[in-house]
Amino acid sequence: MEIKKILWPTDFSAAAAVAESFVSSLTQQFDAEVHLIHVAEDLTQYEHYWGSGPDAKHVEELNEYAMKISRERLEQLCKDKLTGCPRYQIHIVKGDPAKEILNIINQVQPDLIVMATHGMKGNFPFGSVAERVVKNSPVPVLTINPSKRQAA
View (cartoon, rainbow, N blue to C red):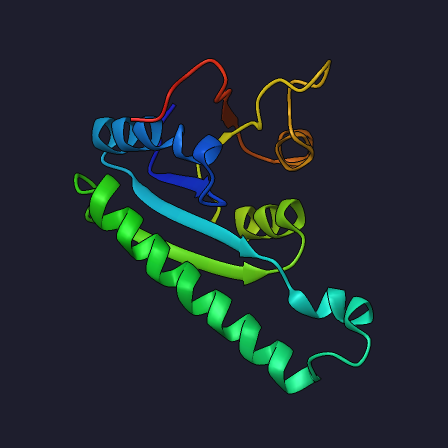
């Protein structure tokens, strides 16, 4: 198997951080390009909860701020954790995480996706996002169980 592109979805959680060492190792081993994706939550979906709270302009400003912070965090992540990988691309989108990850898979056409599961919760070995990606991805998905590994 030749791995030239790796997609790494992250939500900046401790669970997602467990995948860092795998991405870094695979990147160095295969001299692969890394595509990081963060799916930001679209705050407009909560407008009906706010009643007479923030107007649409304020909500859009909050969305833009969240996207800016996400970009800064991904750039810092690349700098700090992927120093052995000079080739990376950042993707930040708003929406449903599994759906947007699957959309990026179709656009980028990676050879491998590396992502964390949410760990074991009762009888469910995957979080809903990881499960949907595994079930629908056209390319292999390496899932890392954070309850079995510790972040580097």
